[in-house]
Image 1 (tube, protein in one colour):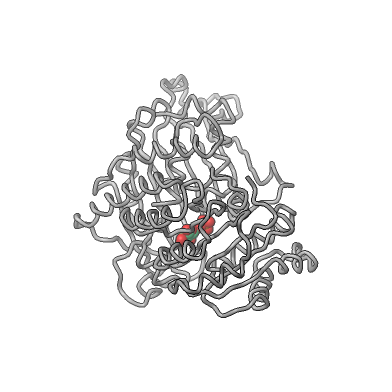
Image 2 (image 1 turned 90 degrees about the vertical axis):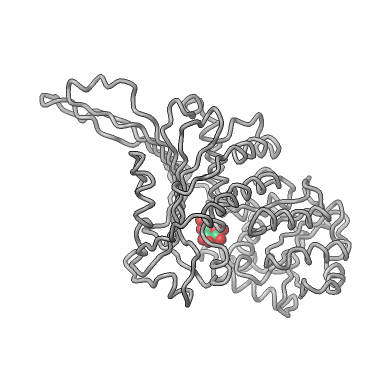
Length: 482
Ligand code: BG6
């Protein structure tokens, strides 16, 4: 049910980087398109000592920086800024929450909270909200990652939140689920009859999931070095992509049906062996033609933190028996790319063999970003009279979502996720059992790392990671889709 007229949105971490880059521009987009009620107040809070006017000035600068020129309508922007209010708060001090509640006024008919704060402040914040009467039945709370650094700390945070809110009130954010193409994966699988009969071990050889980035540390030294690539990207975004790719067809498009199916996949993940994973750390190199420093220089010291990880994962159920899921993620790689590649098996018998024709197995590439497309590689005969034999070539059946839906404005993930939070739609948020299944698998993997003597492998910035990651697929007779 949508929040009613006296409702408000409370943004923790309102002066942070996520707020500046994503949340404020997304909320502006919802305002611009009249998707939120005219009387929905947005109250920001953070440690910075600002007042309403100061926060509005901060928001204006953010909009100016992150909105495209053609969307900077002064009247619309002024209308949006009028919604904004601000209350400074030191979340570690419980007494400040009373002033926050006062600023919010009557929240009895609905309050949505978006919590993007330092992990160390999580428990104190929930406690403060409860103390100030801001954890009643008509409150929803969105939680931004990181939610813990292992199963135990994640369970502690989840317990703290559960002390104030029921699971139906809790919206754990994984911004990959807000991406258009990730939802399109469901449209592709379950809106077409074509793929599902082939979507199993009988017809699929393996699956690859790549999330490569060209950026390095990006000024997040402390956080990133404590976290590393595995926990920053694989534990959440990549496992969600894997779950969406591997899940059984849900009975309905709703939060319970979809999340029930995802969690079954996450629980069926087989513990990874030491020889099924590779860790790397970037060294100096050139990314997109620009010379860049290595991780130790970016960080200002040596470190054992991985900036690259490749894993051969398995889903132990009937559908996926014997089908590896190769996962690969890293910073400072050759290009920014997120994609899922489904590699089908060879045809069972090659009728062209006597004429020299060699069909290659079909491959489905689902590109999530920066381009958005679905590309099916199929075999075709090269035109001609074939006197020298039949030449088969791979051609692409291309569905470019950017072209097919050229008129539709591309929404950034947070526009959808904030609107879903405000309206109480939980489908694209992660349930507690999913997060815990993700951590259980990641913790086991890290324990194998810790027990093994495999060093972290250096790789030159601008490539595709350490050679060992290439060997991970090559020794199985497979290749990454580079
Ligand atoms: C975040 C990670 O969750 O996702 C970052 O903390 C990463 O390290 C980012 O860069 C990637 O998101 P996107 O949407 O740019 O692929």
